[in-house]
Length: 65
Image (tube, rainbow, N blue to C red):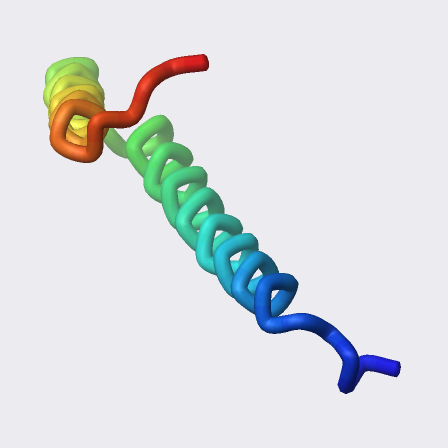
């Protein structure tokens, strides 16, 4: 039964697993900063993430739908 899984489904499964790991990591980092970070550190962290996301969106040419 499972031998008939197409390669496209395997790719999708792999992408979903990778995405899930990234989301878990971001949530853990966010929780740590919420507990131990000062307000100034949190502002800097937020600015860095927003800048990273902006650069990624601009470089990749991703459009919001």
